[in-house]
View 1 (tube, rainbow, N blue to C red):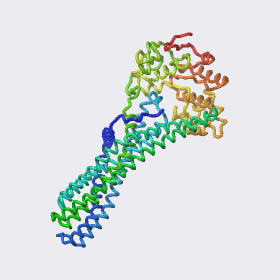
View 2 (cartoon, rainbow, N blue to C red):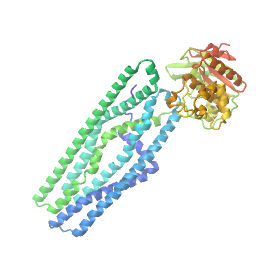
View 3 (cartoon, rainbow, N blue to C red):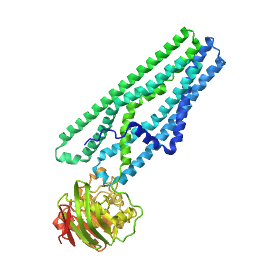
View 4 (cartoon, helix red, strand yellow):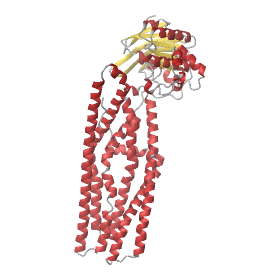
Length: 562
C-alpha cells in the first residue's frame, strides 16, 4: 500500500517546525550565518580589489596604493578560506547534532506508539523514515537555513555598496536580479517540483517497505513458488520509482537552466546600464567597473537559493512524515504515578471496546480470575481473544467498563508496575540477532544461568538449545530465520517464565509445537499455577484440559462454559 503522497502541512509550516527544533543550537547557526556572509564578501573582495586597481589606473581617486590593494586581495582570499571552514563546520555540527536529536525523538515516539499504533504501520516505511528521511533533513539544516540568511545579508550589503560607491541605478538592477533569482524562480520552481518531489519520497518509502517485506518473507515466497511473481512486482515498483526520479530530475534541470538564464540576463542588464551611464557622462568608467564587478560576483548566494526547491521538495516530504509521527497521539498515555496493587486477582466488568466507532469488537465482557488459577479463553479466529489480552495490558484504551487487578482499575496502575507484574506471550515471538542467552535476558538482565536453564526446561526448549553448536551462546541469526516457528515460540515462553511475573497471558502458546512438547509445556504451566495466574488463549481442546475455568468468546461477548 502506497503512502499518502500529499503534504499535510505547507512548506512554510514545515520549515518553521524544523527551525524550532534548533533550540539552544540557534547561536551556532547565527555564527554560521555571520561566517558565511563575511566569508562571501571576502571572496567578492578579491575581484573587487582587482576592479579597484583598474579604476585607479583609469584615474579614479583611490586612497589605497597598488601594494595595499594587492595585500588586501590576498588577505580577503585567506580570510575567505578560514571563514568558509568555520561556516561549514558550524552548519554540519548543527545538522548532525539535530539528526541525533531527531532520531532520539522518533524512537521515543515509536516507543509511545507501540504496540497499538505500530500494528497498522509498514515496518519498511518506518525504517526509511529513520534512515533516509532523517538524512534528507540534514540538507535543510546544513544547506538551507544558512544559505537563505547569507543571501539576504550579502544582497543587501552589495545593494548598498554599489549604490554608494558606483550608481543606484546599477544597484536597483542588481536588486531586481536578486529578487527574481532568489524568490520568483524558487517559488515557481517549488510549485512545479512539489508534486514530483513528494511522489518520489512516497514511492521511495513504499518501495522500501515492499522490498523489506520480500526479504523477510523470502522463505515463504520460495516455498509457494511465488518468486517470479514477486520479482515482477519488485521490478514494477522499481520502474515506478525510476519514473518518479526521472520526473523530479527533469524538473530540477529545467529550474537550473532557468536560473542560469536569469543570471546571464541580469549580468548583461547591469553591464548595459553601466555602459549607458558612462556614455551619457553620468558615471565614470572606473566607478562603473567597480559597481559592475561587484554585482557580477554577488549572484552566488541567490543562485544557491534558486537551487533549493529540488532538495526542499524532498526535505518537506520527509519533514512532513517525521512531524506527523512526532505529532501522532498514542492509543494510550503511560501512567507514571499509579496506585499500588498486589495483583492477587483480576475482575473484568462491563468491558467494551472498538477499534473504530463502526465496529465493536468486545461488548459487555465480564470475567474473573484468582491467583493460582489457569483460565482458558476459546473462540473462533478474529473474535477478539487477542484484543482482550491487550486490553488487560492497557495496550489499547478500553471504551467502557472495568479491568481491576487486586481491586485497582488498570487505568490507575503505573504502566511500569503493570508490565512488571503482567507478561504476555504473543503468537509470534521476535528474536534479535544476538545469542539465545541474550534474547532470554531481555526478560531479566541479571538472571543467573541456573534461572535461565530452569525457564527453558519449563518451556521444553533446554535440550534443543544444548544440541546447538554453541548452546546458549548460539547466535539466532538475522530475523531469527535459523530457528523454526515452534522453537521461537518456546523461547518466547521461556522468556515469560524467566521474567517471573504474577500474571502470564498466553496467546496460542502451543500453536507451533508438536503434541509431545505441548504436553511438557502444559505440565510446566500447571506446576506454575501454584505461584502465578495464567490466562490461556487457544483453539486446541487439548490445551484447555489444564484450565480451571473456561470462557468462550462469540460475537464480541464472553460467557463461562466450565
